Amino acid sequence: MERVLRLASQNAAVIFSTSSCCMCHAIKRLFCELGVNLAIYELDEDNKGREMEKALNSLLGHSPSVPVVFIEGKLIGSTDKVMSLHLSCDLIPLLKKAGAIWL
Image (cartoon, rainbow, N blue to C red):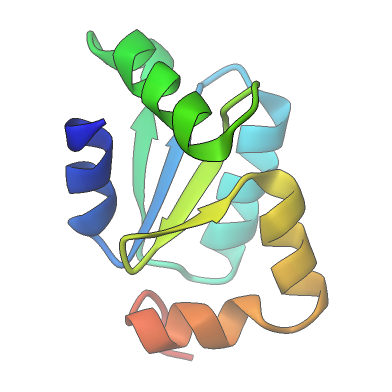
């Protein structure tokens, strides 16, 4: 858990992902198209990925745990929460406030 929270707080926007997850790909693509300065941690490519995934499951209270987005070190959630913020026009201001985009 400590590692996840440390990594999540080191960048303005962070995604914990797996390389084969289609929902992860969709969220990463959205953030890239918005021009977000982003840190991405691929759990399936990290030797401590399973431990981090368990910590993320614990934080979210459910499985599957990816993608999981943090902005300004704060847990935003997974795909449904990110898309809800985007559709309500709240995602971009949140990212701007965090310094993750400069639009």
